[in-house]
Image (tube, rainbow, N blue to C red):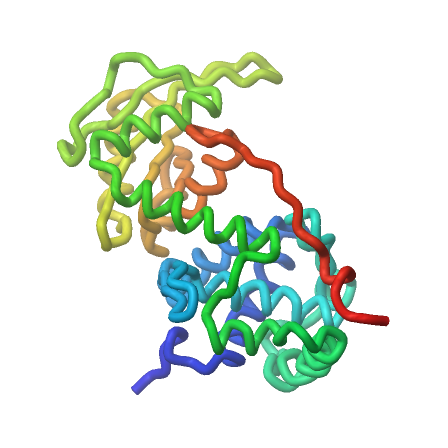
Length: 307
């Protein structure tokens, strides 16, 4: 029986993410945010996409968490230990080093060349801060402890936000999506406001580019699913609606994810912007839609341990 990503050991889960992370960064020229990397590796590999949506509950604290977020952060940290990439703890942007840009990912032995040597760095961190368990041990033993880093706080919030979106009715999800796009500069008309699943578009409007004053016609489609992903059939149907309404481009929004075939279909006709559940969360935070921002501070690892 083929070993799935979710059934692999802790080290092998981290190792599985290494090559896709390097590949999408190389393809993008060596610079992406953490959110962009996550979205692109999910598009690249359906197993990763499935793994990224799985929510677990800590036995010790009862808090919900995503194992994927931990493994992703471990993979980024391992690559930084071995000088494949670099980042600033206060900035979400990841940069490939010359070593990361030139590495042949196809022939890279991840377990021997990255995971194994990275353990020495984790060991040093553990020794430097004996009062705190190493990050790998912390996850394996308790799932997630009290949120002590900015990433952990943000990840916990994103989970709650996704749960709230998943619990919306189809009508509320459509209204929510239109509100988000309004914040992004789309001015909707009364045309095309439909009931979900009727085969019609869910929004029609105009977007004016603030830089060149160009106005374009926009249509949107909203799909709220409990479990399934969006396939190519829904994309092709939307393309037909775009043609019928003479739209310049379309925006397809879902609280789920898009299959690889759906992504391919979106690139074959008129321009379509795909917004999946992970994109939704990032956009809601960026535009602070129905959110009240709160400022907090966490201490970097330099504050812990002794010299």
